[in-house]
Length: 294
Image 1 (tube, one colour):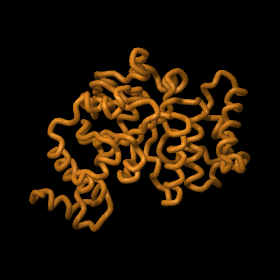
Image 2 (cartoon, rainbow, N blue to C red):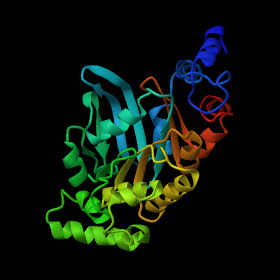
Image 3 (cartoon, one colour):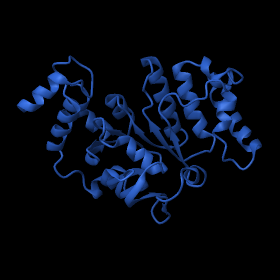
Image 4 (cartoon, one colour):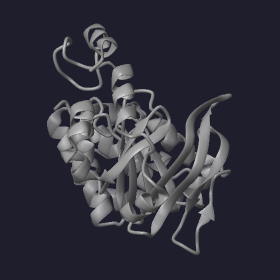
């Protein structure tokens, strides 16, 4: 590590936990990550990770907020029923990818497409409502997105506001209650009485009312106790494995995210630095040193 990096480590809190004197700052992590990823993965490598059958494709995406470009010529490929975890230092552009897929950013160039080869649909310019209703993409916000004074059932029904009729939204909500007894037992209770894990379950379930094919999940473990973190990842695993959902997530707990995901991407300064199978990135010593606290 350079003299500057050592000074950064002493001055700042870092990407992962540890003694203040030993943790690398975000800037230091970014510099070190850039060194191990001079060119980034090729499109062929990304397609191979998606089993050469990408279902969600981002090609040459340049996006950001206002006039500020955060993502630079970004490419992303994930197959139907696969899970992809995005890791990297704060400010690397991870959540901006989710925002761009769902329509929360300004797109300066590139495309976002959904569908298998030969049936891909360019959804770049669709509104968020159109992406949810007609393109099968749902966005699960970070913590505290439930309405605390509304009942659990009312929160669920809010997820079906784009359904053609209220009765259809109620029908989908009943399916959720059948699947998750924790929520069914509390359907008439205000959401504020739920535990942290139950609130996250409600947030995920609310997104399921529109029966999306793609789930964009932003920081599923944030603010949760370890026992609830395990519960939430078990729920996501069931949605992927049993229901065939395609999951793209941002997860600050890089170890937990890579343990869960089929594919891992490392983002640095708005660009893709590394990509690989989740378990392979867990074994990568440089990824471990920079992002896993080891």
